[in-house]
Amino acid sequence: MLMAEVGRERDGELIDRGVMKNVLQMLLEIGIDSDAVYERDFEKMFLEGTKEFYRRESQEYLSRNSAPDYVRKAEKRLNEEKSRVTHYLSPATEPKLMSIVETELIAAHAQSLVDMDKSGVVTMLENGKVEELRNMFDLFCLVPSTVDILRSAVCEHVKRTGRQLVQDQERVKDPVVFVKGVLEMRDKYDAVVEDAFRGEKKAGKKVKEAFEHFINADSRSANYLAVYVDELMRSGLKGCGEQEADERLDKAVTIFRYLQDKDVFESFYKASLAKRLLGGKSISDECEKVMVAKLKAECGYQFTSKLEGMFNDMRISKDTMKGYKEVARSSGDGEGVEIDVDVLTTGYWPSQGAPQCQLPEAVKAAIEKFDQFYLKTHSGRKLAWQTSLGNAEVKACFEGRRHELIVSTYQMCILTLFHGRGEVPLTLSEIKESTGIPDGELRRHLISLCTPKHRILKKASKGKTISDSDSFLVNSSFTSKLKRVKVPLVSMKETAKGSDAAAGAGGVPKAVEEDRRHLLEASIVRIMKARKTLKHNDLIAEVSRQLSGRFVPDPQSVKKRIESLIEREYLERSEEDRKTYSYLA
Image 1: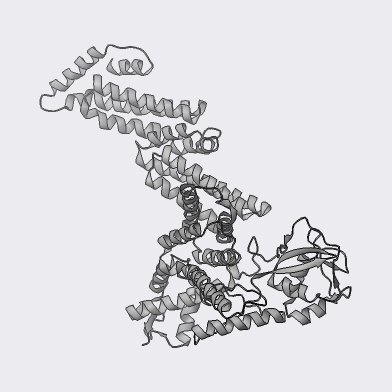
Image 2 (image 1 turned 90 degrees about the vertical axis):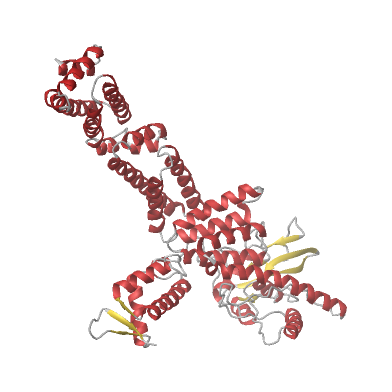
């Protein structure tokens, strides 16, 4: 009778709970000092019946309804069973009852609920059903082991979405679009963790792992992030308030945290920072310094020491130029070409490696004057002029029309060759011989002077390329509405945006690969000097731990560096165990 009444109540009928309570209380009291009668004559049968009821009902309901409907039904049933305990069951029955109900309603179907087609976790995430996902999370929290199924499903979905973004990016090939897509994803899934998972740290960690997985699967991610920050510093932060700018830089740093190859990012970031500083392209020096400070907070002083050195060089250069101009004015030696020089410390700035070109005589004279001034106050130093950098203002006259052309140093060298030649052309080989500009750069700078919008020179051949037999002539009919005309350079195929031309294996720039070899060897020697003797696997693990802040070392690379150090007699193998190394003082 008692079981029948419970069944009727579960089917939605009203029963007399007072009678139920009195009967069950009587069974408890018959047992005198124990619940033996209650447990034997009612509880055992009740729990078995409950298990069978919910096993059957959950399977049937799940087959006919959506995941959110099932979650609501399960919550309702759980509350009903708690109410049953409150009104007529023994309090001692509650943990046993709830364990059975939670097992049959939640644990038994957790995976099916998560994976359910058209209403499971993926559908909830794609359609922004945060409240439904939160309800599922709250339900699963009653059976902690099932929550990991939910976390893993979200993690896998983020990985899939991230891979799609990477594949889309391969078609679009726009680094800024890629990073903005990652940031939009991050904002979306941060909100999911905060709202649906109630800010749970384990869920946040799973999402972070998913982002790290797909971001580091694409070797270009570090480069793309550097290009994105470059875009922010050149124009993206224009008009932003201090707080908004700080928030946008914080988001970029969050993506930086996901990167394993932080040294690759540093390499590209340093190159773009150098261009901004030397070209005066940054919209705010303060924003530049804030970004470097954020990177320093993430990775320490060693990571940003060269970047900070670059800012220091620019500050000192301004003071140096101020002193030079004062000396030039006071000595009455202000005639000739006026130059503005940035003195850079070799170790801080990206290595150019370009040979020095032949500068016009007037520029050479100005350089010699600066050399004398600088070396008089900085004895023992040597200045190496980077003619592949910099720009110049060239005054030009086209059939009576005067313009000031803002060009690169190489373009200045090319244009001055045409001074006083009239209609006499110059061939490519003649220009190359007279200027000493490398062939690739020469062609790039020449084609930039021959574009339809800025056709300062006319070339003999048609098309966008330059042939070996091409000749060039000043375009005397050149016109522009502007008095000051800036001549932009055409982009090279091997520019930082989307190219791996300067990269070694796995998309890592060759300069970074070289730095990694030195870092690996320094780390191995440092560890072995402290430990004296160490097994192979333990050494690789310790090296990986020490360098994880900059990059994740490949075990094969570590092994090669160990072999190199053995050859150079920094280490030796133990005679007893060939997998054990000893440090040689």
